[in-house]
Length: 74
Image (cartoon, rainbow, N blue to C red; front, side, top):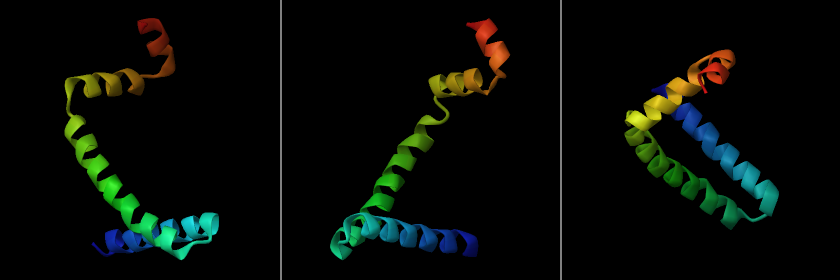
């Protein structure tokens, strides 16, 4: 759990630092620092939900094969 918390803090610091460096605005950097993780959380929910879908499994299977086998199978 400590690793997860420390990574979360690192992520927030990085998000703030990069946004501040790009915009020079503390307000914008602060907003992005908190909006971006919320968007990622929602996106992850749908990503996780779709992960076991048959089309997603077929896609993973197709792209997990070595390149030579993919070319021959197509």
